[in-house]
Image 1 (cartoon, rainbow, N blue to C red):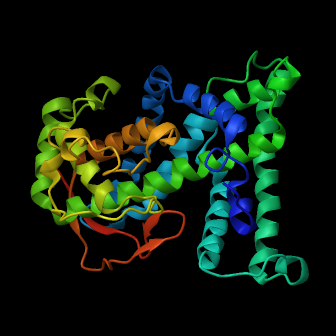
Image 2: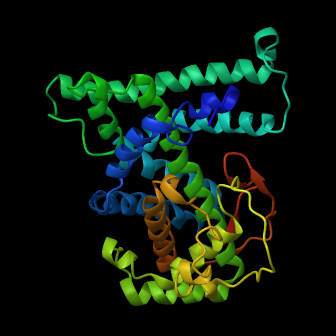
Image 3: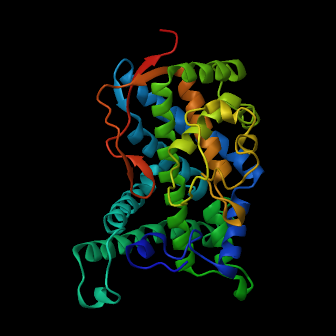
Length: 357
């Protein structure tokens, strides 16, 4: 896929757009970072991040809270911890710069530009995106150097097993032809910061909206959560047993798929608004047609973080359901907007009520 302009500055030549041998090499690295055992090891970090968020929510009990902003912070923290061994505060500038670049991409997505015009005339967005790209590069380089320095000084004897560690192992491979450049590492970091942050926060927000509106399904989901876990934190094994919660997530993905760029045309009538269709899984709901439901893509380029994102969403939702009932605030304004993902332009405001009150 040939990309250029602001989109190039945002995604570089990372996994989303890479092709051929380069794609194959990086995909293998990403697959390794998200193996089942590695995902299991990430669950405690996800739980800790959700617990920190919910501790802050205690100040909003009986009040309105914008969960879209809350989930943006949450998913930023989770991807920082699990894929880059850092914290949200350490990567805060990176997320802010990626968001700014995303808005510039959105503003320019439908604009038609003459080939080569940027060599003669540079728009305000061209100039601003150049500055952001350079600052973004410097910030990611700082995180890379910090990890490399720990190995070089002997503070640790390896680069780690997370995604950044996997990239750096190949970056410093003993066989020269197997190595990837520092630019490749930066591009992959960009993609994973975006994919691990934007898509999951959007999915959590839309799922919360649907549960706030459809309180009967909220109660069904809460009942399942309490039967499986009570008030205890979830386990990786228990996540796989969440049937109702999974149905709700699948329905949210169908209605508000974070990535809207897979264009399809319906051949026949579609029955809307039936979470029950997913009671026996996605395959049964789509009559075994893999192209009928594509929230994570399909084929060899299926989203590599599918299970990571699903686990994160399940953990966040069930821990919220354990603690709170919630309804939609009268201040909510429905305005889905496509920037990098389908997100709620004016946020998702809900009213929190502690369970048992």
